Image (cartoon, rainbow, N blue to C red; front, side):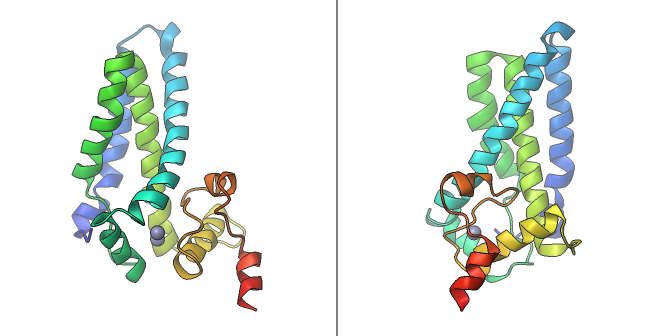
Length: 186
Ligand SMILES: [Zn+2]
Ligand SMILES: [Zn+2]
């Protein structure tokens, strides 16, 4: 969805505060002896996000009607301020992550998992923004992510779905290395 400047950058203000708020709520709700449980849930939530990032991009952004049109707008104009409004991603995280986890496991694990998922989402939005808007140093992580995402945009949009890492593309064999893309052009 095309967003105004305020709407586009809101994630970068709201979500760091949400992660901090979730950490405070989870950790203050219990004794220090149970804090490792919170951190385990947090790391688990972050890992879950990396898979969600891959699956959402592969099966939702490129296939589901209406959502696909909005993602196509990003493919058509890569530097336009196109994204998911913060209120919408917030509602989705509360409804599909926090609420079920709270019902199943209670506040400690629910806040940990939700904080991990939220931080993962923030990394995804941040890396995707930097890939399209910022210069990168040769050999850096950002250059590597830029290369693989540009192949998604310009070589084959059914490959390289991961934006913040190529891990799940390698697992599901949707990864394309720059050398392969160069070979295919010859
Ligand atoms: Zn992109
Ligand atoms: Zn795409």
